[in-house]
Image (cartoon, rainbow, N blue to C red):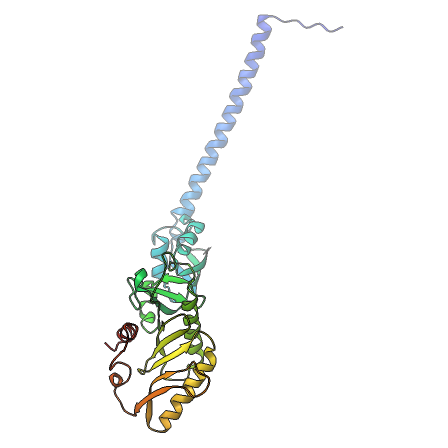
Length: 304
């Protein structure tokens, strides 16, 4: 037999016990929260304000020419801050937002070092397309190309090296065809880039090279060498044409003549023009350019 007796007095004692338990739990929770807050403040003071963890060095690894100073500017790094104050993911995103950067990695090395790895787009040529506002050899308004044909602005750390790079000239273009971080879509422009890359390989031992390569039409390219020679290439068969150019030039040098112009598209009986050895550069290609394209090339190559 079970008997339950209920009265206002009994209910009051039950509520009182619940209130006391609640107060104890609140006190314990408050103590734990206070301890946690104190621990967090202590940790923050230890890691954020401790001079031992101040940023002292940026350890940079790159395949290009970016410097620690440029990385700090891109990432907005405060040199007075603790290495624990930096959001590594945010730093990486800021660096990778640059079209001239392929990817980046960021990590800490205690006590005061940020390790940053940057894979850059290494420029191999300028791209000029006046209808689209791209100017060759212009650090402010020009665009560079890497070996994959990706366009990007000339970053300050590439400005000096870029002065030595050849120029690829397009006589027409469409909106959106050239853009930072996007590949060159023009077929003729990509063939011109192929010629430039192959010439760097095959002419590596020579004291001259292709200074400007322009798209003449849908089946040919017109190039200017650093010696002042006009050279016509096709869109394909570039290796054979470059080797023919080497053979022709060396043969003429043996006979005290200098190559002024050549059409390398034919596989036999190469049409060529030459002048006597010792002729000034302006006596070669710069004397009388026949077309607007030739005038533009001569100006870009420094003959104007």
